Image (tube, rainbow, N blue to C red; front, side, top):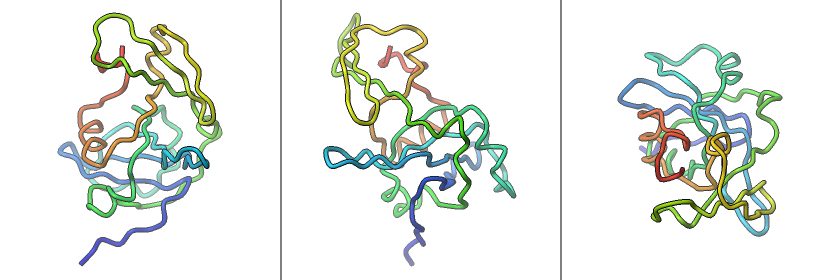
Amino acid sequence: MKPRIGRVRVGSIVEVVTSNGLAYAHVTHVHSTPRSAYGPLLRVLPGFFLKRPATFDELVRQEPVSMMFCALRRALKEGIAELVATVPVPDEAARFPLFRSTNDLWTDGPKDWRFWDGEKSWRVGEITAQQRRMPLAEIVDGTLLRERIETGWNPASDPRFQ
């Protein structure tokens, strides 16, 4: 029997079963323009749970561990993730975030960074420690989503993205 898949929308709560317990992410945006379609943006929420919380209103107001675009429909079909609730996006998370990207991941030394606001991108060169906390303009699959949640990954903790 195929898993039941609901409609991914802004406000969807995504449950991921991890080796540490249940983890949750909140869909805050679905990026789709004529020139690009990153899809659902997930705010990975803090903590692991033994059982599903009765409500998510307080959890979605907490500072996220990380943010990333995810090939969520596929993760749902593969049973890696499940849509379990819909909660309005808090005001502090409603604005589309600024992302960073580089083509220089595997080079030593300073990287040539670009920023992207969901519509346009621009070159910035080197970035500051504060800017290293910005999310990456990338799309992860369900397996990498689960791995990153389990390890508490964020862009500032990954040496490749410094």
